[in-house]
Image (tube, rainbow, N blue to C red; front, side, top):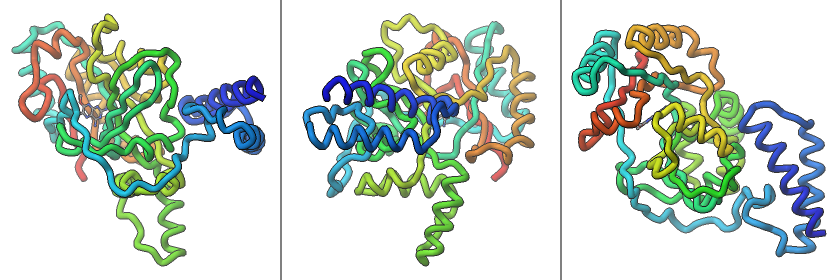
Length: 308
Ligand SMILES: COc1nc2nc(N)nc(N)c2nc1C
Protein backbone atom coordinates (compact mmCIF):
# COMPACT_ATOMS: atom_id res chain seq x y z
CA UNK A 1 0.00 0.00 0.00
CA UNK A 2 2.89 2.37 0.79
CA UNK A 3 4.38 2.05 -2.71
CA UNK A 4 0.93 2.35 -4.26
CA UNK A 5 0.28 5.55 -2.27
CA UNK A 6 3.69 7.03 -3.18
CA UNK A 7 3.21 6.24 -6.86
CA UNK A 8 -0.28 7.77 -6.84
CA UNK A 9 0.97 10.89 -5.00
CA UNK A 10 3.78 11.41 -7.53
CA UNK A 11 1.50 10.71 -10.49
CA UNK A 12 -1.24 13.07 -9.26
CA UNK A 13 1.28 15.81 -8.41
CA UNK A 14 2.73 15.53 -11.91
CA UNK A 15 -0.74 15.71 -13.51
CA UNK A 16 -1.58 18.71 -11.31
CA UNK A 17 1.70 20.42 -12.32
CA UNK A 18 0.95 19.82 -16.03
CA UNK A 19 -2.57 21.21 -15.65
CA UNK A 20 -2.09 24.14 -13.24
CA UNK A 21 1.49 25.25 -13.83
CA UNK A 22 2.04 24.42 -17.50
CA UNK A 23 -1.61 24.89 -18.51
CA UNK A 24 -1.21 21.63 -20.48
CA UNK A 25 -3.63 19.02 -19.09
CA UNK A 26 -2.35 15.50 -19.72
CA UNK A 27 -5.35 13.46 -18.49
CA UNK A 28 -9.11 14.15 -18.36
CA UNK A 29 -10.39 15.63 -15.07
CA UNK A 30 -12.52 12.53 -14.42
CA UNK A 31 -9.41 10.33 -14.55
CA UNK A 32 -7.60 12.68 -12.13
CA UNK A 33 -10.56 12.58 -9.72
CA UNK A 34 -10.72 8.77 -9.92
CA UNK A 35 -7.01 8.45 -9.01
CA UNK A 36 -7.41 11.01 -6.21
CA UNK A 37 -10.30 9.01 -4.73
CA UNK A 38 -8.17 5.87 -4.91
CA UNK A 39 -5.38 7.66 -3.00
CA UNK A 40 -7.82 9.05 -0.43
CA UNK A 41 -9.05 5.51 0.31
CA UNK A 42 -5.50 4.19 0.83
CA UNK A 43 -4.56 7.19 3.02
CA UNK A 44 -7.74 6.72 5.03
CA UNK A 45 -6.68 3.12 5.76
CA UNK A 46 -3.03 4.08 6.41
CA UNK A 47 -3.02 7.66 7.82
CA UNK A 48 0.78 7.60 8.13
CA UNK A 49 0.89 7.79 4.33
CA UNK A 50 -0.75 11.25 4.37
CA UNK A 51 2.54 13.07 3.71
CA UNK A 52 2.61 16.88 3.56
CA UNK A 53 3.12 16.86 -0.23
CA UNK A 54 0.28 14.44 -0.89
CA UNK A 55 -2.29 16.05 -3.21
CA UNK A 56 -4.93 15.07 -0.66
CA UNK A 57 -3.38 17.50 1.86
CA UNK A 58 -3.89 20.66 -0.23
CA UNK A 59 -6.96 21.71 1.67
CA UNK A 60 -5.88 22.02 5.29
CA UNK A 61 -7.83 20.83 8.28
CA UNK A 62 -9.02 23.19 10.92
CA UNK A 63 -10.43 26.70 10.63
CA UNK A 64 -8.02 29.23 12.11
CA UNK A 65 -9.10 31.59 14.90
CA UNK A 66 -6.92 34.40 13.48
CA UNK A 67 -3.94 35.04 11.23
CA UNK A 68 -0.58 35.32 13.00
CA UNK A 69 1.71 38.21 12.21
CA UNK A 70 4.99 37.40 10.51
CA UNK A 71 8.11 39.50 9.92
CA UNK A 72 9.59 39.72 6.43
CA UNK A 73 13.35 39.40 7.00
CA UNK A 74 13.79 41.02 3.58
CA UNK A 75 11.22 43.82 3.29
CA UNK A 76 8.59 43.51 0.55
CA UNK A 77 8.92 46.85 -1.21
CA UNK A 78 6.37 48.64 -3.35
CA UNK A 79 6.99 49.99 -6.85
CA UNK A 80 7.36 53.56 -8.05
CA UNK A 81 4.87 54.42 -10.80
CA UNK A 82 5.13 55.82 -14.31
CA UNK A 83 1.99 57.06 -16.05
CA UNK A 84 3.26 57.88 -19.53
CA UNK A 85 6.13 57.23 -21.95
CA UNK A 86 8.03 60.33 -20.85
CA UNK A 87 8.13 59.08 -17.24
CA UNK A 88 9.53 55.78 -18.56
CA UNK A 89 12.25 57.72 -20.38
CA UNK A 90 12.98 59.64 -17.17
CA UNK A 91 13.33 56.32 -15.31
CA UNK A 92 15.71 55.08 -18.03
CA UNK A 93 17.80 58.25 -17.79
CA UNK A 94 18.14 57.87 -14.02
CA UNK A 95 19.15 54.22 -14.43
CA UNK A 96 21.79 55.10 -17.03
CA UNK A 97 23.14 57.89 -14.86
CA UNK A 98 23.61 55.24 -12.17
CA UNK A 99 25.03 52.29 -14.08
CA UNK A 100 26.00 53.51 -17.54
CA UNK A 101 24.51 52.79 -20.97
CA UNK A 102 24.87 49.00 -21.08
CA UNK A 103 21.44 48.20 -19.56
CA UNK A 104 18.90 45.46 -20.27
CA UNK A 105 15.37 45.51 -18.91
CA UNK A 106 12.86 42.75 -18.20
CA UNK A 107 9.23 43.70 -18.86
CA UNK A 108 6.57 41.77 -16.93
CA UNK A 109 2.79 41.97 -16.71
CA UNK A 110 1.69 43.49 -13.41
CA UNK A 111 -1.00 41.07 -12.23
CA UNK A 112 -3.83 42.74 -10.34
CA UNK A 113 -3.86 40.51 -7.28
CA UNK A 114 -2.04 40.59 -4.00
CA UNK A 115 1.63 40.24 -3.28
CA UNK A 116 2.65 37.14 -1.34
CA UNK A 117 5.90 35.77 0.03
CA UNK A 118 6.51 31.98 0.02
CA UNK A 119 9.22 30.33 2.12
CA UNK A 120 10.59 26.88 1.29
CA UNK A 121 12.97 24.79 3.35
CA UNK A 122 14.71 21.78 1.79
CA UNK A 123 12.22 22.02 -1.06
CA UNK A 124 9.09 21.99 1.13
CA UNK A 125 6.60 24.86 1.35
CA UNK A 126 6.61 25.91 4.99
CA UNK A 127 5.19 29.45 5.15
CA UNK A 128 3.21 31.88 3.04
CA UNK A 129 2.42 35.45 3.99
CA UNK A 130 0.78 38.61 2.72
CA UNK A 131 2.89 41.71 2.08
CA UNK A 132 1.17 43.64 4.90
CA UNK A 133 3.06 46.91 5.41
CA UNK A 134 6.19 45.49 3.80
CA UNK A 135 7.88 44.34 7.00
CA UNK A 136 4.95 42.75 8.89
CA UNK A 137 2.51 40.51 7.03
CA UNK A 138 -0.05 37.84 7.93
CA UNK A 139 0.62 34.12 7.86
CA UNK A 140 -1.86 32.68 5.32
CA UNK A 141 0.01 29.43 4.70
CA UNK A 142 -3.05 27.18 4.92
CA UNK A 143 -4.91 29.28 2.37
CA UNK A 144 -1.98 29.55 -0.04
CA UNK A 145 -1.53 25.75 0.10
CA UNK A 146 -4.93 25.40 -1.56
CA UNK A 147 -3.67 27.16 -4.74
CA UNK A 148 -3.15 24.20 -7.10
CA UNK A 149 -0.34 25.88 -9.06
CA UNK A 150 1.67 26.50 -5.86
CA UNK A 151 4.19 23.65 -5.45
CA UNK A 152 4.17 22.00 -2.01
CA UNK A 153 7.44 20.24 -2.81
CA UNK A 154 9.98 21.77 -5.23
CA UNK A 155 11.79 19.79 -7.91
CA UNK A 156 15.04 20.39 -5.97
CA UNK A 157 15.45 20.34 -2.16
CA UNK A 158 16.46 24.02 -1.95
CA UNK A 159 15.68 26.56 0.77
CA UNK A 160 14.64 29.99 -0.49
CA UNK A 161 12.03 32.73 -0.26
CA UNK A 162 10.13 33.74 -3.39
CA UNK A 163 7.67 36.53 -4.06
CA UNK A 164 4.75 36.68 -6.40
CA UNK A 165 1.17 37.70 -6.95
CA UNK A 166 -1.82 35.59 -5.92
CA UNK A 167 -4.86 36.37 -8.06
CA UNK A 168 -8.29 35.22 -9.18
CA UNK A 169 -8.63 34.48 -12.92
CA UNK A 170 -11.48 36.36 -14.62
CA UNK A 171 -13.37 33.09 -15.25
CA UNK A 172 -13.32 32.19 -11.53
CA UNK A 173 -14.39 35.74 -10.66
CA UNK A 174 -17.45 35.64 -12.94
CA UNK A 175 -18.48 32.18 -11.64
CA UNK A 176 -18.01 33.25 -8.01
CA UNK A 177 -20.13 36.39 -8.39
CA UNK A 178 -22.82 34.44 -10.23
CA UNK A 179 -22.98 31.97 -7.31
CA UNK A 180 -23.00 34.82 -4.77
CA UNK A 181 -25.86 36.55 -6.58
CA UNK A 182 -27.85 33.32 -6.54
CA UNK A 183 -27.25 33.14 -2.79
CA UNK A 184 -28.21 36.83 -2.54
CA UNK A 185 -24.75 37.63 -1.30
CA UNK A 186 -22.87 40.83 -2.10
CA UNK A 187 -20.81 40.31 -5.30
CA UNK A 188 -17.10 41.23 -5.24
CA UNK A 189 -16.25 44.48 -7.03
CA UNK A 190 -13.29 43.04 -8.95
CA UNK A 191 -10.99 39.98 -9.07
CA UNK A 192 -8.41 41.67 -6.86
CA UNK A 193 -10.89 42.19 -4.02
CA UNK A 194 -12.21 38.66 -4.53
CA UNK A 195 -8.68 37.22 -4.27
CA UNK A 196 -7.90 39.30 -1.16
CA UNK A 197 -11.22 38.31 0.43
CA UNK A 198 -10.60 34.64 -0.37
CA UNK A 199 -7.11 34.61 1.15
CA UNK A 200 -8.45 36.34 4.28
CA UNK A 201 -10.85 33.46 4.96
CA UNK A 202 -10.04 31.67 8.21
CA UNK A 203 -11.45 28.41 6.84
CA UNK A 204 -9.04 27.03 4.17
CA UNK A 205 -11.91 25.09 2.57
CA UNK A 206 -13.44 28.39 1.47
CA UNK A 207 -10.14 29.60 0.00
CA UNK A 208 -9.81 26.21 -1.75
CA UNK A 209 -13.21 26.71 -3.41
CA UNK A 210 -12.21 30.06 -4.96
CA UNK A 211 -9.92 28.70 -7.73
CA UNK A 212 -7.11 31.14 -7.04
CA UNK A 213 -3.83 31.13 -8.92
CA UNK A 214 -0.33 32.54 -8.42
CA UNK A 215 2.54 33.84 -10.58
CA UNK A 216 5.99 34.05 -8.97
CA UNK A 217 8.13 36.99 -10.04
CA UNK A 218 11.16 37.15 -7.79
CA UNK A 219 13.60 35.55 -5.41
CA UNK A 220 14.06 37.41 -2.11
CA UNK A 221 17.77 36.56 -1.90
CA UNK A 222 19.62 34.60 -4.59
CA UNK A 223 22.27 33.67 -1.98
CA UNK A 224 25.00 31.43 -3.43
CA UNK A 225 22.97 30.18 -6.42
CA UNK A 226 25.29 32.06 -8.78
CA UNK A 227 22.30 33.71 -10.46
CA UNK A 228 23.44 37.01 -12.07
CA UNK A 229 20.25 38.40 -13.57
CA UNK A 230 16.56 38.67 -12.89
CA UNK A 231 15.73 36.72 -16.05
CA UNK A 232 18.01 33.86 -14.96
CA UNK A 233 16.22 33.96 -11.61
CA UNK A 234 12.85 33.50 -13.30
CA UNK A 235 14.21 30.55 -15.34
CA UNK A 236 15.49 29.05 -12.06
CA UNK A 237 12.04 29.43 -10.49
CA UNK A 238 10.54 27.54 -13.46
CA UNK A 239 13.10 24.72 -13.04
CA UNK A 240 12.05 24.44 -9.39
CA UNK A 241 8.41 23.95 -10.45
CA UNK A 242 7.02 27.44 -9.86
CA UNK A 243 4.50 29.08 -12.17
CA UNK A 244 5.89 32.22 -13.79
CA UNK A 245 4.22 34.48 -16.32
CA UNK A 246 5.29 33.60 -19.86
CA UNK A 247 4.53 37.05 -21.31
CA UNK A 248 7.75 38.47 -19.86
CA UNK A 249 10.30 39.90 -22.29
CA UNK A 250 13.91 40.99 -21.95
CA UNK A 251 14.79 44.09 -24.02
CA UNK A 252 17.82 46.32 -24.47
CA UNK A 253 16.30 49.78 -24.75
CA UNK A 254 13.58 51.91 -23.20
CA UNK A 255 12.10 52.35 -26.70
CA UNK A 256 11.57 48.57 -26.82
CA UNK A 257 10.00 48.80 -23.32
CA UNK A 258 7.60 51.49 -24.57
CA UNK A 259 6.71 49.34 -27.58
CA UNK A 260 6.01 46.34 -25.29
CA UNK A 261 3.90 48.48 -22.94
CA UNK A 262 1.81 49.99 -25.74
CA UNK A 263 1.31 46.54 -27.23
CA UNK A 264 -0.36 45.36 -24.03
CA UNK A 265 -2.69 48.34 -23.75
CA UNK A 266 -4.80 46.80 -26.52
CA UNK A 267 -4.20 43.10 -25.74
CA UNK A 268 -5.10 43.52 -22.02
CA UNK A 269 -8.80 42.55 -22.35
CA UNK A 270 -7.84 39.22 -24.01
CA UNK A 271 -5.90 38.04 -20.93
CA UNK A 272 -7.55 35.46 -18.64
CA UNK A 273 -6.63 37.62 -15.62
CA UNK A 274 -6.61 41.33 -14.75
CA UNK A 275 -3.42 43.35 -15.03
CA UNK A 276 -3.07 46.94 -13.83
CA UNK A 277 0.22 47.73 -15.54
CA UNK A 278 3.62 46.56 -16.68
CA UNK A 279 6.64 46.19 -14.38
CA UNK A 280 10.02 47.10 -15.84
CA UNK A 281 13.18 45.89 -14.06
CA UNK A 282 16.88 46.29 -14.67
CA UNK A 283 17.96 42.72 -15.52
CA UNK A 284 21.49 42.63 -14.08
CA UNK A 285 21.53 41.90 -10.33
CA UNK A 286 24.85 43.74 -9.99
CA UNK A 287 23.27 46.84 -11.55
CA UNK A 288 20.22 46.41 -9.28
CA UNK A 289 22.55 46.39 -6.27
CA UNK A 290 24.39 49.45 -7.60
CA UNK A 291 21.11 51.38 -7.95
CA UNK A 292 19.77 50.12 -4.62
CA UNK A 293 16.43 51.01 -3.13
CA UNK A 294 14.78 53.94 -1.37
CA UNK A 295 13.00 53.17 1.94
CA UNK A 296 9.89 52.30 -0.07
CA UNK A 297 10.85 51.01 -3.50
CA UNK A 298 13.68 49.79 -5.74
CA UNK A 299 15.43 52.37 -7.95
CA UNK A 300 15.93 49.58 -10.51
CA UNK A 301 12.26 48.90 -11.17
CA UNK A 302 9.15 50.87 -12.06
CA UNK A 303 5.49 50.08 -12.66
CA UNK A 304 3.90 51.58 -15.77
CA UNK A 305 0.27 51.97 -14.68
CA UNK A 306 -2.57 51.66 -17.20
CA UNK A 307 -5.30 54.27 -16.91
CA UNK A 308 -7.82 52.80 -14.42
C1 LIG B 1 10.77 43.78 -7.51
O1 LIG B 1 9.58 44.10 -6.81
C2 LIG B 1 8.40 43.84 -7.42
N1 LIG B 1 8.33 43.16 -8.58
C3 LIG B 1 7.13 42.91 -9.16
N2 LIG B 1 7.05 42.23 -10.32
C4 LIG B 1 5.84 41.99 -10.88
N3 LIG B 1 5.79 41.30 -12.04
N4 LIG B 1 4.69 42.40 -10.32
C5 LIG B 1 4.71 43.08 -9.16
N5 LIG B 1 3.55 43.47 -8.60
C6 LIG B 1 5.94 43.37 -8.52
N6 LIG B 1 6.00 44.05 -7.34
C7 LIG B 1 7.21 44.29 -6.79
C8 LIG B 1 7.30 45.04 -5.48
